[in-house]
Every structure is written in C-alpha cells, then in structure tokens.
Image: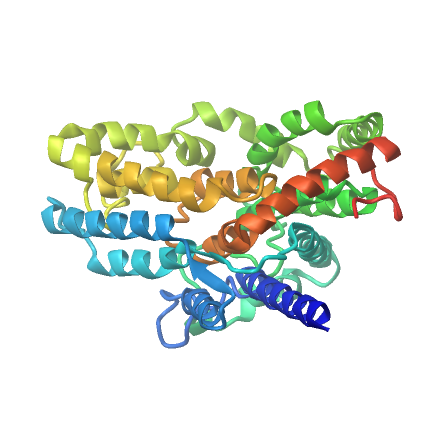
Amino acid sequence: MMAGSSAAIARSSEQSSFAVCAVTLLCSVFLQKIALPGTGGLYPVNLFVFPAVTAAGFLAGRLEINTAAFIWYALFVSMGAVSAALSPSAHVSVLSLGFLVVAQAPLVFRSTSTGMSYRRILELLSSVGCVTAIIGVVQFAGQFAVGADVAFFLDKHLPESVTVSGYNSLIPLYWSSPVYKSNGVFFLEPSFFCQFLAITLVAELVLGPRALRLVMLAAGLLCSYSGTGLTMLALFLPFYFLRHGHSRLFVFAAVLGVVLIAFGDMLSLDAFTRRFDEFSDPQSSGWARFLSMFRVLQDVVFATDLTFWLGRGPGTVQEQFRLLSFSAFDPTWGKIIYEYGLLGAAVYFRLFYVAVCRGPRGLRFAVGYTYLFLGGYLLNPSVLMQLAALVVWLGREAVEDGREFNRKRDRATKATDGILVPGLQAK
C-alpha cells in the first residue's frame, strides 16, 4: 500500500514537472511574436509568461533554487548595477538592467522531480519541431498557391500593438525577390525558425533518428533559407557521425545531398551558397553576425581600463552601430562583454556553466551554442525559455536519465544500423 502510494506521488511529481517544462517550451514557440497590448511592441508577452510559469513551478514545489547559480546570478546583477553607475556612456539604460534581472532569473531554478524523463523532453521537442517544420513548408508553398498575404497572415495582419517590434519577419530570398523565406508562421524571423529546427534535429538524432522525421525537419530547414542554425549543425554533426554514425545514416545523408544538388536550381539553393562569401565582406550579414563584434570590442570597450573591466553599461551595445563603417551585430557573448566588461563576463559565464553546462548531455551544446553565438539573446525571453525548458530545469536526475538513455540508444542504433524503426527504439 505504502509502495503504491509512493509510486503514485512520484508519478504525479514527474508529470507536473514535465508539464512546467512543456508549457514553457510551447509558449516559447507559439507566443514569440505576441507583445503585451499597449506597450508598442517593446514588451514580449513571454517576458511575463516566463517568470509567471517559473513562479508557479516554484510555489507548486516543482522547481527549486539552484544555490550556486543564484549566487553567481546575484553577483552578476550587482556588477551590472556597478557598470550602470560608472558608465561613461549617455546611452546606459536602467530599464535594460531591469529586463536582465527579470529575464535571467528563471535560470537559477532547477527541477525537484526525482523522476523527470529526459526522453520525454526530447520526444516533445521532436514532435513540436516536426509540426512547426510542416507548418513552415506549407507556409512557403502556400505563397505560390494562395499568395503571401494569406501564407504570412500573422506578419501581414497581426495588429502592430500586439506584435513584438524590432524584428524582420518578412525576408525575401534575395534582393527584390517576390518569394519570402519561411518563418514557420509563429517565429520572429526565418533565422529563429531555422535555429529551432536545428535544435530539434539534434534532439531527434539523440533519440535515435527516424527517417520520416529527418525528412520533415530537413524540408523545414530548407524552406527557412537561413544559415544560422546550419552553423550549429556543422559543428555538431561531425562529432555525432564519428561517435554514432552508421551506414544508413551516411546513405541518408548522401541521398539528401544528391537530391539537393540535382534540384538545386529549382529549390533556389543559391540563396544558401551565395552566402559563403559573406564572411569576407564587412557589409554582409554573415560578417556582421559572426565577426563584427571583435572589431567593436577592440575599438570601443578595450580602449580604456574602465570599460575593459566593467564595460559600457547595460543597454549600450548598439550605441555606435550607425557610426561604424561596417555592418555590426550584437551576439549574446559580445553583448555581455561590451556592456559588462571582462569582470562581468567572467561572472556571467560562470553562471552559464553552473546553470547550463551541467545539464544533460545532448541538447546542451545545441541550445547553448544557439543562445551564445547565433543571436543577441541575453534579454530574449523566448530563447531563454527554450534554454530553461530543455536544459537548465531538468535537474540532476534528468542528467543521469540522459546518460542511461544515451547508452540504451547506442545499443538500439547498432541493432538497426543507424536509423531506428518502431519497436527497436531506446526504451
């Protein structure tokens, strides 16, 4: 009787802990574009949903404070206050510091569940990713059948008062093209869509790749015509193939490559390939996204001892962008160093290590790399929600569950030579 009661309590705890992560993940995807009414698009609704779900999980006993993460978070916030007080910039923003306090606070929590299933999180992510991939493909194809006005109905018809501002959701394949890149309907930009599908593809590979799902995700990635998520996959896939690759996976990759080459013109793949030259062009988006911040830091932050150690202050990272002779971008890692200096960056990266890098292996690289290098996501609640739901909140038990799952997955993939079939997946 007691054993049955304990098992029921454990199941209830696991279910509710999973629900907290699931709600957070779903809101991070499907509420990305929605702003709080009356804020002029400046306040994403997820900026309030994220701490609200966190508070609910904490009050319900499903989340607890990670003491080590909280200490580093408090120290980083304190250094942010010092940086704001001593900033030599006229563009320092106390509001930006307030956003930081709210948006980053949920990262100091973790799950209290002793039975959180890592596999359930991966399955949820894979399912959500495949659904959004199908939506993205339908959206891309739909603009040829019913017109862009219908295919991109949220971007065309959502009132500005409830739309998050500052993002370019409608991006043509190339200059003056009448065809738009797919943004998956719900994502802020095609790059956000691409990055999410890339993370989902990693989850599917960790689960044990299923051919149909890989095809769906590949189709969604193609329709996004964005390269940001592909840079993460370019780093992840070689290590994955070396460790887990089997002949079927290589055959699948080869067939996909042949199809892309054969139908490259029809699929407008030059929208991808022409971007390889961007890394040598200071006026291109590729150079701006990945290389420009090194120049900005050297010319501005590292010019004086004060800004070298404490940065230019919260909210200042774009203060000189319009004055530069090259295109510039503020990825998360660069924004942290620019605004909070080397001391602040050292503290924050320690917080990141404690909160993220001790999470379950598999998704932590994909999500962590995306967060740090593929966008200015320090204050972006939707990306932070994915970071929390997929890595930070899973707790120690999920880490152990992830390790055990990886071992079972390796045995299952050997039995099926790389691509799993029903009945032989890791149980």
